[in-house]
Image (cartoon, helix red, strand yellow):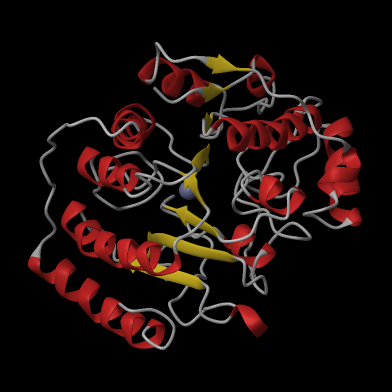
Length: 326
Ligand SMILES: [Zn+2]
């Protein structure tokens, strides 16, 4: 069974008023995945945060946390935000060392080099980019990140935009209909890294059958690239009725995403997921990671949704075919 990375410090980052990104989230996942070994993380040093974020942003987070001031309209802090965020980076690092699943807060994939990334209006509840940290700290090569949170992982993509050693596949709801408003298939990375950033879009109300069409594409990239590491930015907010978005994925999708890393060295870091996705999505994902033999039913999309999906997928393939056998 896969080990989990967790520490109670992750519960201390909380808003003084109700917020969807709250400590209960981790309690839901822990319960869904109970019975597994829990490994405690160590916090990283302030200097190490500067490997992925610029100095001004690191200072801004530290001061905001001391004052308990929000960073923007979506992203709160309190006196424990700073220590929780340093420990979340450490959690991702220990997940790498143990091929484990880091159950951390605050989340990270929207946090870019100087905070808000790729023109995003806010940080979207994220503080430091957890998933990026071990990759940058250890200068890992031949990395393949699969970000299946329903929102575009704009921060992660920005950090690795010109890094050809990191392939970043991001599956998300059509950004014309959801925060952060970018993450289109023609965003493929810059400089030497052109073609290493892959954005795959699902229209609102898309279900498991659309993910089913994306999984062989991801599989071909994996087969072609033969990564040394597969890293999951694991968000479960694409699960039907999870609350913040409009997709209709169910266990089938998360299980099959977990199966994709069979035979590879891999680790996972929690991103979003707010209610039912955290419970049912995380369990199915881990069943996939653990190569359990389980059968799930697919939640299908309507014909009109499928047809919209195929239009954008056609465009994405046309762009990506210059770089990949898809
Ligand atoms: Zn999300």
